[in-house]
Image (cartoon, rainbow, N blue to C red; front, side):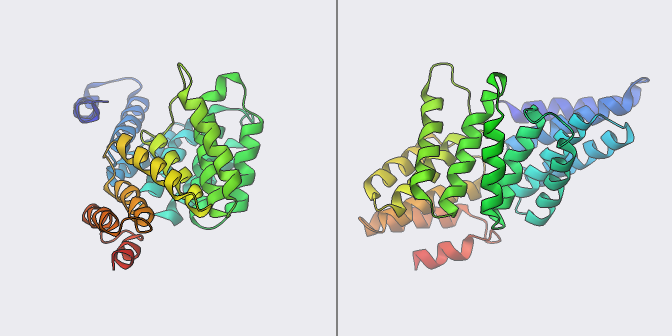
Length: 278
């Protein structure tokens, strides 16, 4: 979890590649890819995108295998999504998905690409298509692939909330929570995946008029959240502001104020936050 230190070491390694004689391009591609991943873990998405783009250029130059190309493109699409570049994210992830179709249906990279593609599809309103992709991916999972199941279930939970199918969303979300609570459970792919899952469940319970349970899940989501991405953190706070607006106006105001302080004014959710605070 010491991503800053890892980045420093990888940057030194990258600066020393001029002394390597054989396999230099392959080495540079690998370092760029790791730098992208570590910057992504720190929510430094523009840097992650730049390193991913460099890794992809080297991967093309080296005529890397389909799985490697899919993986690099998948990272590029995911970081573009988190940075708010949805059109670019869609392009990268659609290309990754097309490449992944030549891989077995239960291939790790194919499943991961579908999982990330559905985030973009949901954001741009293609919820039914996102749900179809996710359900198909879950249906072909094998025992070795179960590490992805909580993430896929969480994505389904979020998609079904968007479709207004709140009971179904809760079913998927609660199944993911059960998996995560088991001994030696696989963690979510996203470092704050469990917080996002709990927040999705809180929204579903809210729309089913179960405010007390919605608050319980939202507070737990905030409690376990690792503050990496200020915009994501702000959305958790804003959700609590919305929930408490029905039971405690002062608490709602405090959550909204904190959310506004954390969120970037250029984020597409910022006007909504100002409106809710008003």
